[in-house]
Image (cartoon, rainbow, N blue to C red; front, side):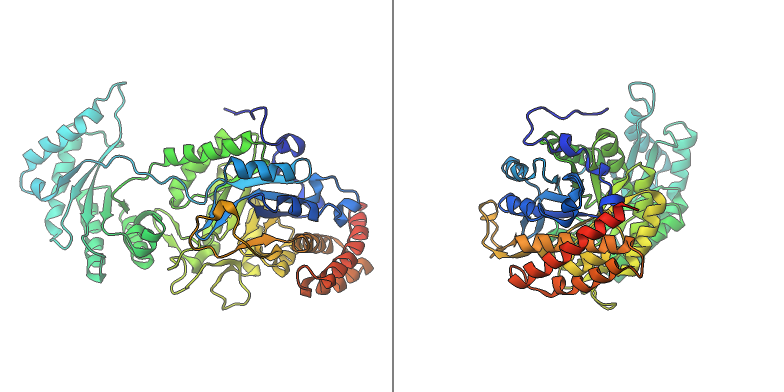
Length: 536
């Protein structure tokens, strides 16, 4: 089903430029996205109206500027509302592409708890256990419509108790199956352990033993619950069993389960269907308001939950550009592993394979998490950036060599990537030389400014980043320079001129005559460079 844009939207940018996925970065170079709540939107749009690319003959859409409607609070990026849409729309109409992010986090509500019984009550009375469980499964076995409905029943086990006797439940499982009281493919039994304190090393050893006992008893699942980890509490929730165990512990339990074909997860099941629909509501609002695209985050979903959500969203937004986000500062949890910062490239490649399989062709890679303690890098005290400044820089998620590996896979898959996360002017230049699809960077264009009214209630904000005209123009010009330099012959005079003029543009301070002069000199050669590239 395709949903149609509502007439009378705040702006007609979607109709003017089309969906963002139609932008041609191979001809016009990478997009530049600058985020704003509307107070500086006109300044941002006006900063690039005399760009070298336009002077060389590019259309407005080819100028490659995105006005990204955003509120940046102390806790990170948060969605905008109609006031912000209207302000940004007024500046974007017919001049720039227009996007937003409908939320870094998905609506992670839980389904109703699964039925729970105490395992100890079922061990010594086989006949009684079969009868009790059959009664629980019966409404789901003989459901209206004729087909069994799926159901998992959890058998609660006291942490630290002897798990040896639990293996006796195999006879109960077999009796249920052989007696036709359950449907093997739809009905499952699992163990549940609820800790009353943070698990210690001995608890993790016991949990592994519980997984082994579940496999021996023919059970399909082991679920855990207990006090939230600090990292989960301050973020509301995190992925899967990272709610309860630290990353090494969670990884060990997931791998133990995978080795015995036992699923390992939290007590409560995330409602992925509602998460998908809540995301869609935000995306459709953006589409109705005339935006060219909207990004959406998937925290705190596991990879399998993300797969379901992205599949639904892609189907519901056909004909428009909905951009799922991979967050390089957030662990990726799969059915059998936990990927942290030391394996973020591996995680990104796995995620790209998944979105490709779902038909997604434009994605975002970002680092939006502003909370500490970090859970993707042990001991890192503060938020991460996308790119490292040095090999031992733990505040950066990727090296440029990592970016090259990711781009190689993405291009084989025909998936284009927008990059974001504290990207500086020199890093934007490096990414542009790699001909990426787009770069979002606001901090590199900005100077500290007063807190705007829409964030006045945020108690941790003393100031906001305010985009400057020279800052936007500089990054826009550097992205052009990196792209055309990658297209020009290695020994050409144009390339030599560009490289000579990049340095002064990078080193000059914002809002100074030195930067104005440096950009004028760089733009002069860029006009000739664009004309040369387009004449090939």
